[in-house]
Image (cartoon, rainbow, N blue to C red):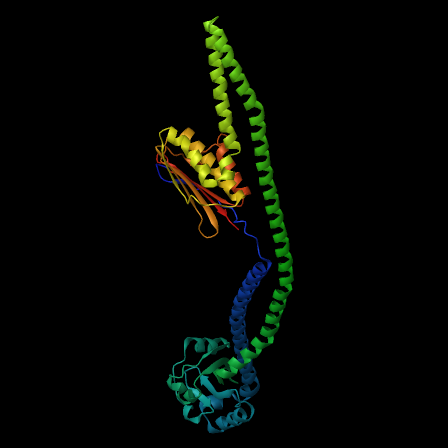
Length: 447
């Protein structure tokens, strides 16, 4: 329900499922496609998560390797003599590094002092060179921590590593024998980090995907069972609806027949009797004759009202000549009242009896409301059949109404239309502009 005041459109919609039978294969296919889409999304997220996690774990392993190498290999040689650059100390640690540490994936080893001077490297051209240390390196140097980052091979201190294209450098803060801070640094091929991450990824990815696929396959039989239950329920509902429509039509026909054969015939007899009595009494008692004639006229008016009611209850032209003829009959009352009417529909249009009955009832109630409440000058009725649907629209240029202020108890006709559309599997929409008319639209599925 949407409401816009001050002359703007007020709309009341009653959306109803189309009533089209659900295909088990189609429902299961939609379920499977949705599941595969979800599986694809989960797979993408899993790839990203596992790849990131694998790389993180590989970098953590590289940090652990650097700490173990620093403590087990470099620490015994980290002496004041090495920090002072004495050749004997450099040769001692170089032998240990080359025999015990310098192998794949490690490609370079450097040891720095606190001033940024390289006191040892397996690349002898770097020994004694001084370069500024970064903030993270200085932090590790002071705190004894460990950190890692992708090497910036454009920096001068890394010019001899450019042949490796991409490296991970891990630095670890240590202390020499005399307590002097030093920075132990290892360079590893980044491809080894990627390979280690891929191993972690493969370890978890295949079982996880296999589990999700098995879960998807296990749900398909459940989806088939559910779809069958839904289809059975839908068919039962449609059968009950059809029975209700048939029963309603039967009752309308029975009531119309009983009214025609009973009260209408009785009133016709009373009218003839009163007319005859009035003729006989005219010469004897003129006042009595006038009263009898007045009563006879009232009886004839009651007969006309009952016959109109019979047409409303069970319109014969709807069943014999179709919806368009019956709508023309409804609009004739507006012509007699001086209201301009227009019926836009194919005169040869024939629809399923149940659909025609619902469209006629909605049009009948809508036109009754227009005639009694709208004070309209023109009324348009349109019937179309696009894309397996029957569309009915009744539009007038009357006083309109504020749908948000409708009292449901008073507007029984509106509630009846909504219930009729809902029970018939259609979709009803009412649109009204206060002071500028009302439109009633009904869409009914044809299959």
